[in-house]
Amino acid sequence: MKKYLEVLRECTLFNMIKEEDLLKMLGCLGAKVESFDKKFTIINEGSQAKYVGILLSGSAQVSMIDYYGNRSIISHVERTEMFGEAFACAEIASVPVTVTANEPSEVMLIDCSHILHTCKNNCGFHQQLIYNLMKDLATKTLTFHQKLEIVSKRTTRDKLLTYLSHQAKKAHSASFEIPFDRQELADYLEVERSGLSVEIGKLKSEGVLFADKKHFELL
Amino acid sequence: MKKYLEVLRECTLFNMIKEEDLLKMLGCLGAKVESFDKKFTIINEGSQAKYVGILLSGSAQVSMIDYYGNRSIISHVERTEMFGEAFACAEIASVPVTVTANEPSEVMLIDCSHILHTCKNNCGFHQQLIYNLMKDLATKTLTFHQKLEIVSKRTTRDKLLTYLSHQAKKAHSASFEIPFDRQELADYLEVERSGLSVEIGKLKSEGVLFADKKHFELL
DNA sequence: CTCCTTTTGTTGAAAATTCAACATACATTT
DNA sequence: AAATGTATGTTGAATTTTCAACAAAAGGAG
Image 1: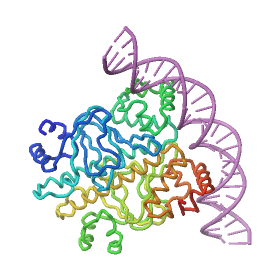
Image 2: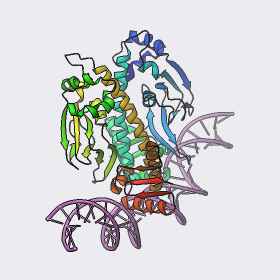
Image 3: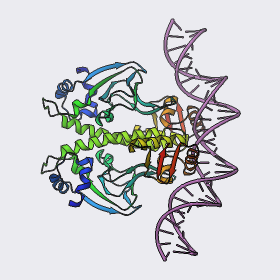
Image 4: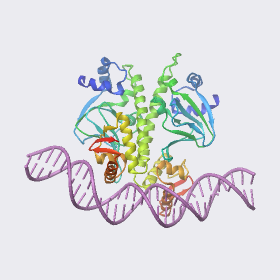
């Protein structure tokens, strides 16, 4: 576990936790680490919602597949970020989403009941962890509002531009990389890939943006 | 404040708080009660994100108005439910949404910093309140997933049917009332009101549902 | 380098949504 | 009861998206 301390320190779940305490905690929480190859499923829709996941390396996507097989990408998860915590904290029966590795990734999984319910050792960290989870969930709600702002737009063009301006803001620069290829971006914006391609082409020829692969610049 | 105890007991923020402690707490938290007439603004977009709101009576809507004046309804808030807590807990500068009274309503407003940061009296309730907030935020994330499931559908018909099946599930019955009129439902589903009317008409003539005003039945 | 796979761009036809405008129904007030 | 305002339904034209299919470009494996 020692080699993961670097990453875990950056994870908001362990905010204000002293490094020397972290290792002990991981044992107490029954944290386990698993590796996943690209495209492999980390959490499957319908499975028990007990785990909080932390991405130690690599990246992942949270998505939903509907009845007709259409994929909707809900969010992208980077190193140090958490996933599945809302479902685990809400203590619902099963997860409504699928989490997939985007590249070879290492994941720490913690049974959330070990966080929420004080252990016999009464190790005193639970209060801080619960506070950190609360902060994380509040922040996550903000990202949901951003996503809703995007998909509430009626045209592919407006959805795309709203998404890109969010990304530019996040990067503190008009020049940035997005974590999605074209198909994934379409699945995130909830539009057709072909229509998205057309729209990116138009915006390029209008001189509104520059786009090459995952690199974008708002002009 | 005494007359509000009945409602407050049902509010998840005060879960596990003994009734005799509740009154004292409200003072400590600096809770204030305000009344709003129908259509009046409770929280304005851009204002300071410091308040957790609790609906004591009436109902309200959380919405966003975009650059072009299009309204998007994010959620409907009923008696005993909270609003604005995510923004206050995330301690961001300003609220990205507007909260409006749907009918004459009474609202309790609590400065969230009084909840999050322990007071000098060290009154010991904070831990429970933070736990309750965490639970609430986790549950709210689930409702956002539901909303995303709706708006990720590509047609008005599918959006409507997905919404109605969620409502039926929530009501534990195929017969239920929705909290929106037609324009509001359109703004919640992120579609055109006229197209929505057409679709409801089609579904009725197909015998899939019965709809009259806010009453719906899935057949 | 070549083959093979994946990704991205392009196109045209079909389907659906948006928009604006009007008609009808309903509710409230005077 | 009449008048007013609001909510809902309806319609047709314009716009946009979706869908399916193919072409071109890029990337990786051997």
